[in-house]
Image 1 (cartoon, each protein chain N blue to C red):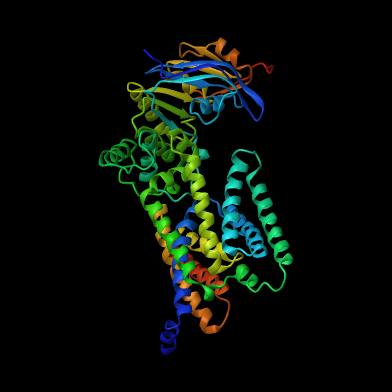
Image 2 (image 1 turned 180 degrees about the vertical axis):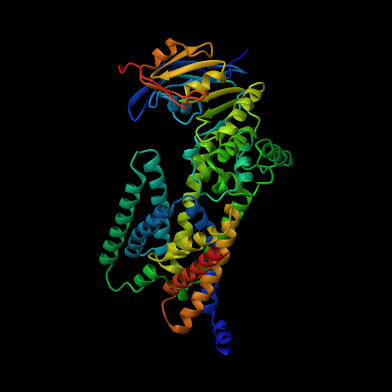
Length: 269
Length: 246
């Protein structure tokens, strides 16, 4: 217990916990939306494509997450545009952007002279080096997510549930889709700091899938996913610290264990 | 009286195949038009043009300012596992008249209660749509189309999943609704349509308008392909083979 209290006296650990907490709020809300719309594959493509932006930013000496964010938003809009306007099949355009982004990233990391210390951090997460600016970005995004979903819940659900019907109703479907695509990619890129490119999407999908077992309405799925995500990521972070193992991977294990427990409860109920 | 919708010499293509040519159609208040035609004949394309979901290659669509469309899509296009309750599905129909930032008001919430009672699903507000049968789901989507009090109701194959007991109710209901609104009903089921509608439009590349609900030989001729006729009688199916040429 003393050890735990001592741990909280470290700023880096408090920051890490706060980052996990804020990412969980974002991932719970955005992830439920992605899962409900069956957009998990798109989101995975966006995540990996963002590595291209990271590599270029590294090479040019810009903040890597800025590059990743720009790449993520552009590829999200690119996928939305290429499948609705250019007539390219959606899964094909996702796969192209996915591998192209990774290729660009690998190329520019290779071209960057010297050692790239944070490469592993990008791939697997680097939660113990979270800075105040990261926390401010995470908090701002969490607030935007909460505001949008609580103010415009019904319009968002109408568009997500039945796009054609929403168009017939005269809702600004394309605008809502572009805004949500941009927000989804920003949310994912910010969470990369916590989970890493390879693991981040599980933070968005496992809690939403678990909440889906019990909740019947998207708003309740979101609330449930946020709770599961917070519990899973905080406990994962503590376990990772005490066992001295990678936090991103540990969080996935704790989330999966929570999912399995909930699934069993659902089955025996 | 000003027509609600007027299609003027519409030509439309789907994936570069011209599926509609020289189509003219006028919908007035209190019309009840049945649109029939073979699969691939352009029924869905025609509907999408009226609903503004696709643009025609040429021709004009004139809509009255007063037109308020209630739309019932084919239920099989819906994701049944989407986490959404009956109440929220029905409420989503209000955006036909509400702006996107508006929240549901008391009157609309009351109307949800009325509609649910009307279709025999009262106190099912919080049931997720995934737990409904095809017929129940279709009724819920009908409520969604009705919540904004439309003056034109567009139904795409409304009798696909409806169970036999509700089918008769549905037709009575549409008859009642027709006193307040125009109805445009798409169906491949010629037998059903002819008993309900006031006029029939056959869509097969072109559009042939018949100012009565009698299925005549002439109508069947305009189909130009084999059709299936489902009758209401004790005989479940009668299949009339027609000539195969285009």
